[in-house]
Image 1 (cartoon, rainbow, N blue to C red):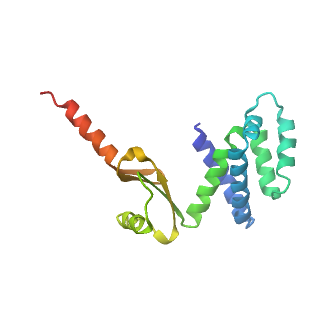
Image 2: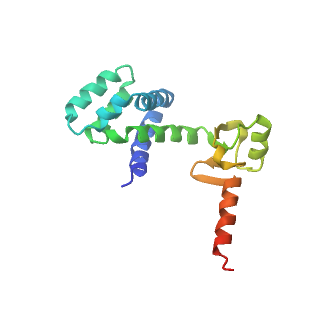
Image 3: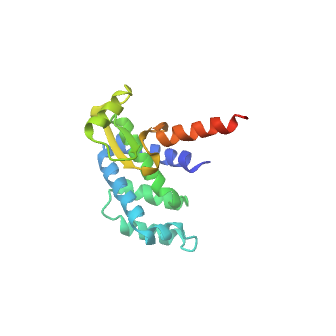
Length: 180
């Protein structure tokens, strides 16, 4: 089973349980904290991946690290470690945040461009896509100078490449396929 599928299963279980207890906001905050801890602490990443550290020791350590978390989050993290899926904690936490976004109708939109975009340009791009609710969209503009111009828009698992780099690559492929 792929990591994403596995992470979605665990995340869905936690999300549905949190909703039933009306703890979804708390769980989301704690999953954001978990993501930050994993991303910012290389030692913690090595700890999670270490096959040398026994499961019961890992459980004791994560319980100590996350003692400020709600019992639901602590028990969930313990369950993940007990099932030897601690390497997937980051992906699981990210999936919980995606479930939160879906539940609240939030769309995360990533626009990659060669230069920083002003708000007017972002609005023009987003207006080209009526499925994007700009009021509930979280827009992130990333810079990639190699695009030369244009943009790449990512939303969920969809990607629209309207970059000059992509157009040049397509032209190059067409020209290389032509035999003169």
